[in-house]
Image 1 (cartoon, protein in one colour):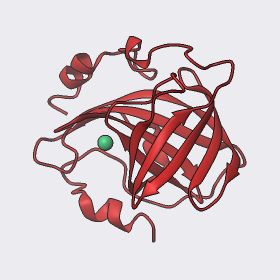
Image 2: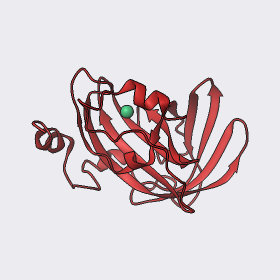
Image 3: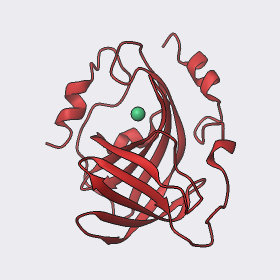
Image 4: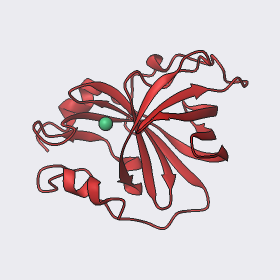
Length: 178
Ligand code: MN
């Protein structure tokens, strides 16, 4: 049910993105981050919940500085298999542009209520505790908690895929005629 929007937005004859199919959740919750250069450059932060990936588009990407509040807009749920997706979505299709798998790993939920989700992520690049705070409709703020990873790195220093080691330009070139 929750992948209905995902499937409706896409033409699977044209895009190589995975079809939306709900899966059984594993005992270790997965997450991924994709760098997505579409009409606007952004990062997609996806968290496994109830057999799908809850998804947030973050225009500026996550920040390790606890003083930064990064806008994270909740978008349609994605299938779990999307956590491995990298490639190009054809121009004119929904989300048309280059998608890089920027990070993946596991996470755990530390706390949640109606407006707040506190998690710890175990990725290669994204680490430590983070809060997602719902302030209006589908709009959230992603904030780094003050832990040993605060101010750890600047995310912009990672310019390659954790899957293929390719840059955005190289991904665009590789998948151009596929
Ligand atoms: Mn996106």
